[in-house]
Length: 118
Image (cartoon, rainbow, N blue to C red; front, side, top):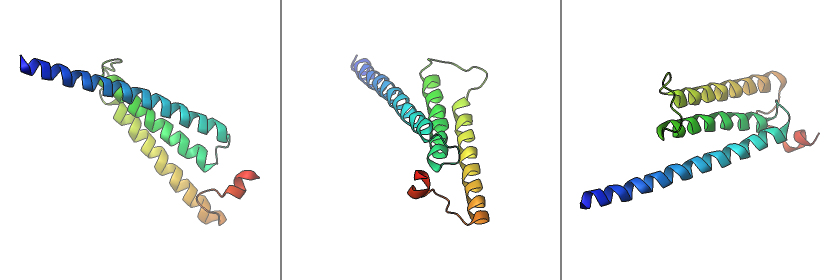
């Protein structure tokens, strides 16, 4: 009987942490989508890093929804990990392209504030 009560307390705690995680993921997804749309320039570092974070958050969101059995992806058990892999490939490609263009044209990898104002 004591074990059942402890199990209920812990299960309720984990349900609430999953719900909080889901809410925080949705809020952060909205913030970074807004930042990506606000920058409006694909070549801007803010846009690129925001897109990377959005893809990464989508991987977390899919993983949380799958773990809570809200959505089940029977064909792809580890779809959240695959989305994370896509975000890491995007991030690596983004940094390599920025490095390549900075060396080729003598620019900095990260944009200056003066460049954004122009």
